[in-house]
Length: 223
Image (cartoon, rainbow, N blue to C red; front, side):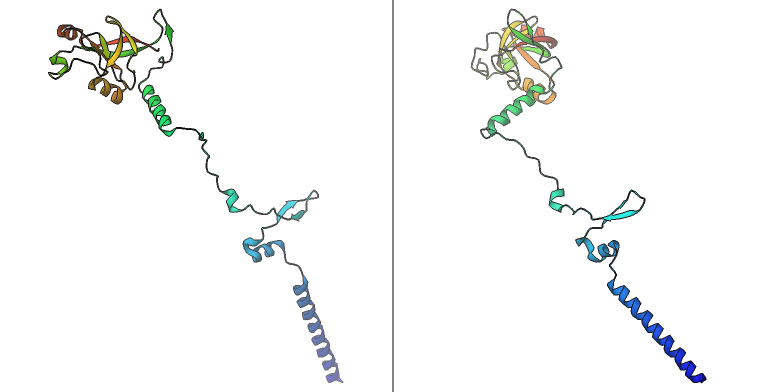
């Protein structure tokens, strides 16, 4: 009798264990994976779901927006507007002239004034003097200016990159004259130091020597 009771209990225990094992296996095979496990298993192919709190305090899972492609995140290159009829040589020349005109320019350069001669602007310049003799211009001087005018007539020398030939300039103590000549000192002082240097042409050497070097406020007329 006892061995029959023992066999019954052993059979019942084995059947219960078998049923419990079968139930746990079916549950693990049929249950749906969590969003975090799906995202980790899929790698970068599926984005993580956005977990947002609901109104009742619970969390709801909402699908995440698709990620933007890398090409859309790259900065776009700047597009420069260039006119179709632009002349590169002329544009470069105008840029160089504007750069030269702005070197060493005082704040009052563009403030024009008016007198009976015309519109003018005032600038402080280093003013020197010379004459067409051999001691000032050398023994091989032809007696003409850079643009072919008579060097024995009154005139002014300056850097033509800043003050064009033919520009009228009024120097106190000398008068009104036109720029018709240039010199190495005038070009060097303006292009290297940004200093306006004008050289007055005298008739005699002692006049140029007596003038010396002065810093004066000159009038430059814009014709």
